[in-house]
Length: 239
Image (tube, rainbow, N blue to C red; front, side, top):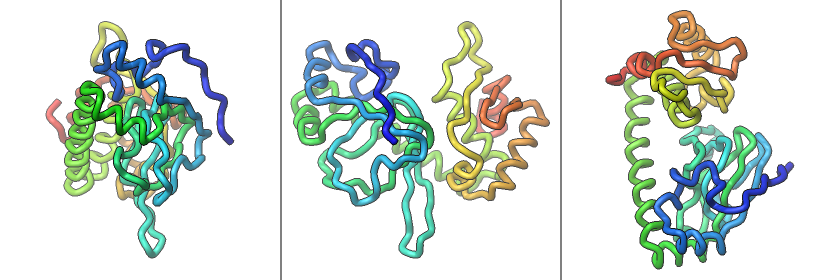
């Protein structure tokens, strides 16, 4: 099922306007983007792309969360990334996509037709500059995630993932930069797949973090973080 697309009168109404690929655009550049874009929405669980599909469009996640997965020849599946609001999906100058992309929650995309967008990168410096910045940030995040998967304990892995989602998904309370609340956008099963753990280990470590006061939840998906710095420290990072 494809969801109805919320109406936005202009880019100025977009909730990711100052974080997405268009964040550095001047008004006339936004006008050029407007000519190539359109919106699509996907219900939770619906595939957006399958690996090998023609890459007809690229775009930004406006709301929701999508997963990137790879399937090995013997059928084993590994999640290799999460796309959160403002993240860019797809690669210009590539004809196909190399991952399965699935909506983990209801997802809204701001899509750009690929060929016009590729021309726009060459003609509009601010779009190309911002896309390069986002690509380098993604590279840094991938290197950081190699550390998470390769060297951290199960507890540190869970804390790292929760801290990453908390800082990306939720706006901090005005005047208080230490605590936040958010709705966990993925299931325990998806967390286990992403982190290379079992579902039982994920649930056990979530309960342990709750017992120690690092997170709080009544509902399994509504998470409160009393102290983001403490959670980051628990993840094995310098707070």
